[in-house]
Image (cartoon, rainbow, N blue to C red; front, side):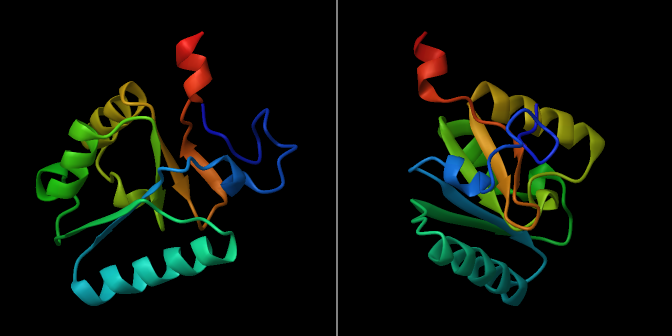
Length: 133
């Protein structure tokens, strides 16, 4: 379920308030200039909303296949119970097979994906209390 303007959470005016304290910035682009431009945009957003990302990861490639995203692979393998802050959902996945596989890993690891351009979660992270109950 996506937390967005059409969800049960529509009463929230600012979805960024739901971001975890351990949020991670992730950017995928075809060159370093584009990476740093996206990171700058995300950090401007974070500064405006008093969000301090715990870590920043990026991958550079002309091919959006998961094989060419070693840092995203590492996040999927090693991280859990956190949120990814992205400039575009395309950073996470763009191909149908990868999209399904990446979404499965994100949900299993309880990693939310927050898109700053849409002010919504592409993938919802369940609160830790949900897992403890």
